[in-house]
Image 1 (tube, rainbow, N blue to C red):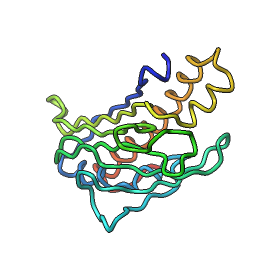
Image 2 (cartoon, rainbow, N blue to C red):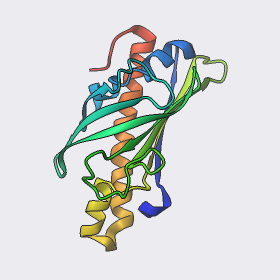
Image 3 (tube, rainbow, N blue to C red):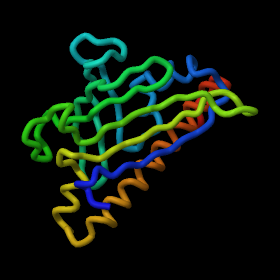
Image 4 (spheres, rainbow, N blue to C red):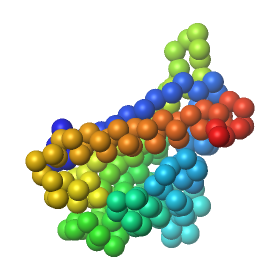
Length: 182
């Protein structure tokens, strides 16, 4: 898979709690920073205090190979108890995007919620990330070794999937018994 193809990674989990409870957790933009080795903290921008279409938040990130950077994310989909998605942009032009807009993101992240099949019940929670189309840290690595683009993309998707699985497990624990995972 090539970066230009918009590669994706997905993780899912069944949560023994109703969608309304899971929704409270997935729309807490600070929750992923608790489990992510990259995302350090997030804050709402422009006076926003909760998700709304077009609302923006700033993320502060660190990675051993890329150092520290910040992002601006725009809420691009919000369907209560069903879907929450945001497009991540590069406000500092660190990666060379022509224009950092939600229509040209570094990545797009989303949570999808649906009723879990019986007999388990609860909520089926899925998290997905789509890379690109704007340049990102992944493209910096590809530019250094273009012959290994597919392996670089696959490695990055595996990293992100591992991070998503930890986040989903944390959401499950919080939703079911109020305790975050260790």
